[in-house]
Amino acid sequence: MHYGNIKECDIADGPGVRVSLFVSGCRHHCKGCFNPETWDFQYGKPYTEETEAEILRLLEPEYIQGFTLLGGEPFEPENQGVLVELLRRVRKMYPKKDIWCYSGYLYDEDLAEGGKVHTKVTDEMLSLIDVLVDGEFVEELKDVTLVFRGSSNQRIIELKKMRE
Image (cartoon, rainbow, N blue to C red; front, side, top):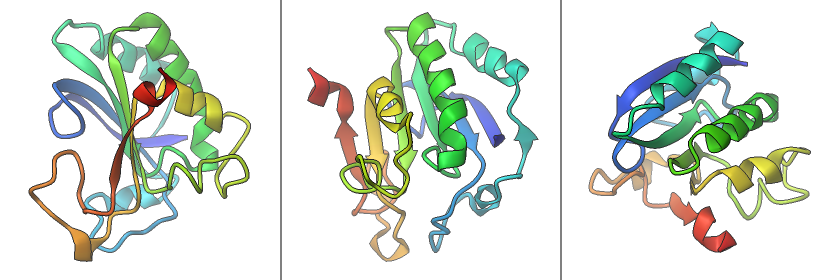
């Protein structure tokens, strides 16, 4: 897996101050995408053990509320195996920090069992995420007044509350 960027102090992709990982690889190719360079699965740098250690180190300060995965597309099958391992470690080391994920895939269709990107680790990956923002960015539905979403079709799904 490759990644395009790690933001150390992100305030746009979830509540509070966050560490965000922008993974590479996306098949959606949404018109008006804010990050089209990440469509390429080889964009950026290779994700390594050192990358993971850096993310975990950046999450340490108390003022960091949580971790956000976005891209690119975290739920591309090629990315899920690496990311589920990272999420396990984040959850174990920082159980009080929240985890958000942005995906163009729909929770109840594409990510569900039998869905087009459901893999053997999709359910576990979803179980480690507190909030999923799903749905492709649709330029015609772009709304700058929305919080934590780019277009009005995207949903903020509180997975943690659904599990409680």
